[in-house]
Image 1: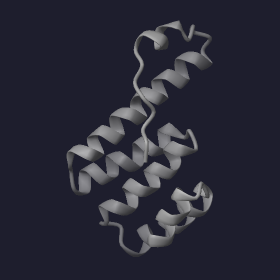
Image 2: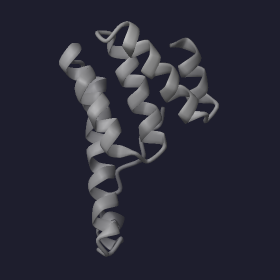
Image 3: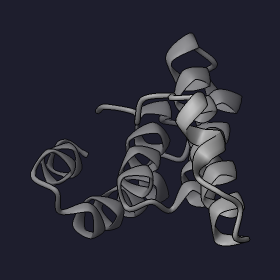
Image 4: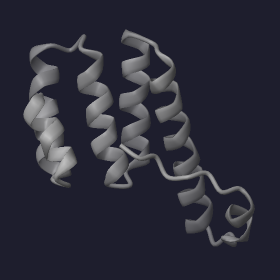
Length: 102
């Protein structure tokens, strides 16, 4: 799991996800593994998978940081879906939620 965190910090998100997949198989009750894997998915703009991991982490051990991460992922997923549907980016110019910084 420590290696997965290093992979996230160096931008090797697929490697991080693979490491966290293995860690979760070994210990599926570890909040950090889901949270960190969610971070890797978030950085890959895979907000649906990030949401799933953050939600799983919250179910195991809720804390405010996880709720904030999930909120950011929800915002980005909604933004991505609206823009993909052809909506104007103007709406998002007025509501400027900064991208989650890990």
